[in-house]
Structures are given as structure tokens and as C-alpha cells.
Length: 224
Length: 313
Image (cartoon, rainbow over all chains, first blue to last red; front, side, top):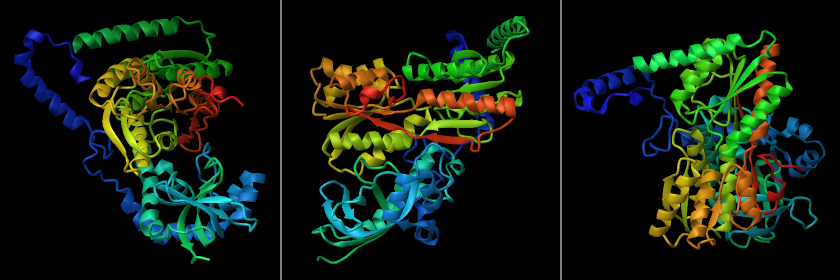
């Protein structure tokens, strides 16, 4: 409001100093400085620290929640296709955003059919029912897509965050944490035919071909 | 300041006079305030909200703030003065808008925000926004795929006062920065503007002729960038936008721009009016103030189904 006053240009040098002082005085008393990161101050660390928040809850809350909530993948997926609401009630986050797809907690066991480790968003296609065909795609990083881990947790609410930016950073922090503590330790060579055990989450409709599972825990067995 | 205030007051008094001169049987009023309709996205919001308001028996007052927080504040005064029962608002700044919405609330006029958030809760009744981060990730994943995970690229960023500019940029980078062979050679704001994107793209291209892709924070900037690239004979550059406009749909269909991300603008505006109606008639607030609507990737596979910010079946 203050920078649009129609001061005559001639009077500017005389008026500038007191006006500036007034403007600064007003803006200091009238404005509250919010700890919201904007495009401009990326360099400064905001009070909000998503990585630390995730680190603090990962072992204590996230993994136990997923372990307790997860259903076997074939069961979850069959129910999700037949009755998404029922699958959501059982394996999903009931406090999800009304317009968002369900995100399910799953336990996936099976064999690697194929793996794509060329992409940095590497994945393994897993046969979970023994028919030799892939049923789900598991992300093994280092780049992990989506926000399935965050969205599967019923104790995380968008409304508890200042804005989408903080909420987004929080979602990304889960992927970074999972990559650092779990995925980066997995083997990447000769994956075909190995047995796999994963606890994680996937969003309904994620992945164009197969459900895209984000792991919170993952084990890959020895070469066959 | 005195002069400005007097003029505002005069305008305000004029509005009041108009308001009181309206016939007694006039329907309840809903004010619909958005950025300029020059961008078809905001027009779709206003059209969607107005249609729903009329369908529910309201009179609609459609106003534009041109991304000017002062003008927005005056328009909110107008809405209050005209006795609006609710305000549907696509706001002019995450911080600057908080006071304006509070002012409306204090005057007994509830606000229902669409498209853009504000940095406060408990002031507006609802904040219904597109899941810009989810959408940006979809766009970025498609961009990474089209680029073959490598090459030089340019990012065009939106207006800084708009949270969505930052969130989309963040969504893009959270995906793209995982690929070390993708190198951003320029990042500039074109303020959501097509003409500004055209001129910025021209100069960026002169300095960086070796670019392979452009990822843009919205569709109007993507249109401007593509026009500049085409004019320079560089139709080979991969351009990805965000919004899901008919212009970009047509460009995708003719092999120009490669992809965009649909925000359900029309449905979002209608949903806000439905929630306003529920609040006015039943004193019922939505379960959550902040509501996210997911976005959808648009590329050659589904562009034909896109019409005025909605997918047909």
C-alpha cells in the first residue's frame, strides 16, 4: 500500500528520507515475519526442517504403523480393484484428502521378474502370485517418485502444515530417508529371479502399468 | 493518501448506492474474485463459479484483481458493501491476502479460496487448491522421460508472490535434480505471462543455443516459450507446461508442446460455490479447511479429451 502513494516526483529528495523512515517503522510493527520459505530465500534455512521431522518419527512411528497396517499385496490389490472404499477402510489412510486417491499400506513378497536399473528412478517388477508375470513395481531409488509413504500415514495431515511447500518437502523427505537408510543398501546387479520382501505403500492409479510401491523396508534374497 | 482514500470512499459510496438501489427481491449475492481473465485458467474458474452460483439461485458479482493486493482489498470492500453472502477468491498473494480475508470475516462475509493458498488457517472457511506439488511431479517425470534423463534445460518460473510458483518449481526440482545429467542452464520468472515468456525465451536461447528442453510453471508461459522457439526454428526443443489449457491441448495435438498437467479449475470453482452454499444455507463448514485436488498428466494420449480445464470421458 505504501509504495504506491502518488508523491510528486519533484518533492522526492526532500520527502524520501522521512517517508522511508515512516514506511520502515510501519512495516516493522505491522508485519509478522512468517517462517515460510519462498523462491527468494532458498539459501536461508527455514525453521521448518522436514528431514529432521521424518528422521524423528521414522523408526518410532512410520515403520511400526506400516507393519501393523499393511496387508499382503495380492489381497490388497484385489480388494482395491473390486471395492476401493473397502480396501481404503482396511489398508488405507482414512484421513486422506477427499479428492486424493487411496494410498494403501502393503506387504509384498515375491520374485523379481525384471529390473530397470538404467534409470535413476530404478524399479523392480515383482511376481507376487507365482504365475511368472509381474504384479507390482517396486521403487529402489536413488530417485523415488510420488508421496505414497507420507500419504499412507493417518497421523499426517495437510492441515497441520503452513502450506503446500512445507507439506511437499515433508513428502520428499520420506523418499530421501528411505533411499538413504534402505534402498541405497540393496544390490543392483543380477536381480532377476531373486526373492524380495517389501513393506511399503502405493497410491491407487499410480504407475501407468503396474502399482508403484514405495518401500519403507526392503530385503532382496541371494542370487538363485 | 488522503486523495486516494477519498476516491476509494467515493467509489465505495457509489457501490453502496447501487447496492441499495437494487430491487428488494434480488437474489443473495456471491462475489467471485480472480486474477485477470486474460489467462483462460482464471476465466474458467470465474465461469465455473458463476454457473454454479446461478444454478443454486444466487446472483454473481464477478471481479478481477489483476494480481494487485491493493485492488483486491478494494474489491473485498466492494463485496462487503454490496452485502455479498460469500466471497469466492483466487487471491493476490499468500501473505498480502490474509488481512483482506480477515476483514471480510470480521464483516460477516465468509471466504472460500480456490487455486492459491494463504499462509494462515482459520481465516477463510475453505482453501481448495490443486495439489500443485503432485502435479509438478507428474509434469517433471514426463519431462525427464522426454529428455531421456539428460541434456540442458531451462525453467520458466511464475510470479513470486504466488505460492504456486514456488511449489511447482519445487515439485519440478524434487524430480529433475535426482538426474545429474539434466543441467539447468537458465531459470527465470516470466510472471505467468505469455509475452514476457516469449521475450525471455528469445534472449535465453541466444545465450544458450544448446538447450534441449523447457519446463514452464504454467501454460501461458509455455505457449510464449514455444512461440519463441518456433520463430527461431527450434521446434525440436521439448516444452512442458502446467494448467491444462485448450491452447496447449491444441499445441500438443499438432506436435508442438509435448505435455502439460491439468488442474481441475472448473470443478474446483464449482466445489467452492457448493461449499459456500452449504455454509450460507446450513451454517455448515467443510470437514477440512485446506483441501487438495489432484492433477492429471496431459500428453498426446489423452489431450483430445481435454476441454476447458476438465477431462471428458
